[in-house]
Length: 354
Image (cartoon, rainbow, N blue to C red; front, side, top):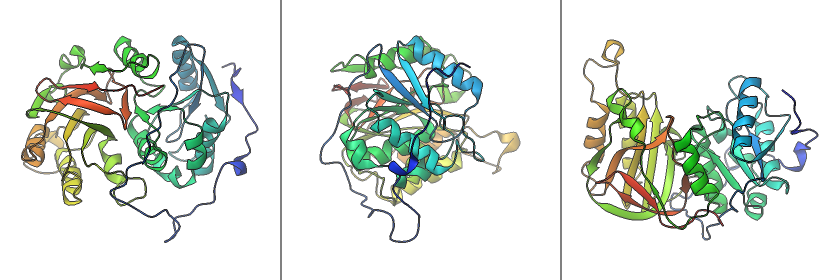
């Protein structure tokens, strides 16, 4: 492809603090932390420039070209660095390269927002190398999902910057996903009702069914993302308090007993003790295939939800339009919302951008 937006010559040493994982080298862990001040980034506008990064797994040339086309069709300009096509095993380049891109995009005044190209794996590896003071002083939209959840947690925990669980650039940008991308990131609306796509219900399999686990409505700030990544933040300096929050979770290709294990770990850690509600997206390909089962008998996914969450006494709904599916909400991490478990909806109660 013609790389008219290609940026070269970034000096990694200018942005990367030294880091390793020896005892005592990580920030102190605080399970109850919540930023003192919440920072909202500026909204995106047509003609703005977004930086494209691959902070987890790698993308190829075709995916890069497709990503640029999709973002340009939204009226946005796109820039990326020579790290965008880097590969290192299953990662999109070595850790310093990927951290370098995140830091550089926040520090560059010509970049108005940051879109992650894909998830995969690797974001948690670069959390110690991010320049959180610089990010806090240069707040911008950061959007992505799946493994990008680690960046949402880490950046919000250390800076208070509202980040966004939404499409990556290789996602399907259909009318539904584009609507909520624009509503949340470009329109600066004070209230937005997130209503799930009817098309999801037409998909085969119980995993797309919408239902209420515990009835009721509740309000609180939104935290969450990919389930396994959220659990992996436990006992790290990048976790946040769930007290008085609404937890939103999605997952892909994890069998019911593993979903059970994730919930059990959060329960044992006390993360649900003062939780206000849980909004569950689509847990894609998480039902047990009995022809290839690890156990002779297995709970269904719904039975796991009911068994692990049914006695929490807080509103809980399953099947909202977010996760590894075509029709995706863009959900702000750290913004106040209302969960209506009876109707399986989320309503943002404040603008997530300024």
